[in-house]
Image 1: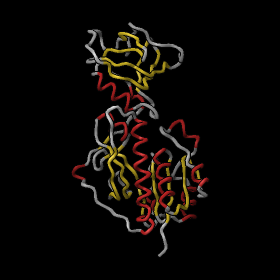
Image 2: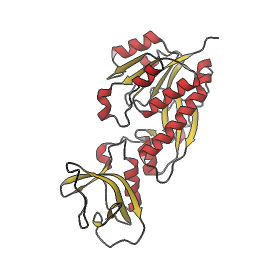
Image 3: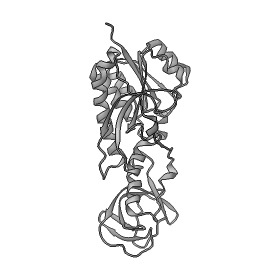
Image 4: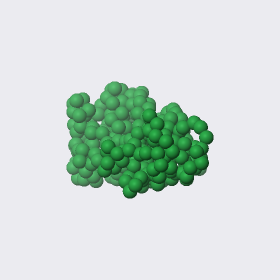
Length: 302
């Protein structure tokens, strides 16, 4: 019996994890398409797929838009049975997916049908929700297709975005490797989602990272972790300059009675800020346009 093959389209670290899983699992990869490196500055968690594909001896094409004629021509030339679309924010048209005769497969890191939609890693941390790795059949509507397999991912109380992404990618790579025999044979499981239980996350923009010091310390801490690298970061302002807060830590002890946003002290691990309830140490920050500047006790943020 002839074994089926696959192609992959992607642009971020989950794309790399999936490709590694395909190569480890022995699934024949006929081609890889990656978003061109010129878009790296605008794509959070961008990863170039060319080096891994070329090391594996797999044909590679970079692109700007997935709707370019060169993309469809590349897939037509390599005729994959399966098309994996992993870690690409652009919508792939149905005509492109149909080139793969067996189907097109997507990835999403929430406990589907919960958490369909955008910015799933950030929302998972912000809302303290479960995480999972899903491979599912792509349809005209995002994240609603039948699930091939779903595996849980541990979410830890102190996870930053990069931590959860890395842990998710480990599970994704292993899942893809384990499923390679099923994809090669064409006998892939599929379980319909319960659409009555679906929830949806909205899009997040860089400006959604602004810190509201009138929130409790726990809420500010979740925001910092949720939008930290590789995302644009949580931010506030001090004396007219933007202050990016990459890492923070709740501080034990009673409130100072100061106004929210006031720097009450500067300790070895960073300035301590009063919130609406509780104190937060800013353990890694960046003052935009003044890299050598710092915050001092008495400075007001906001």
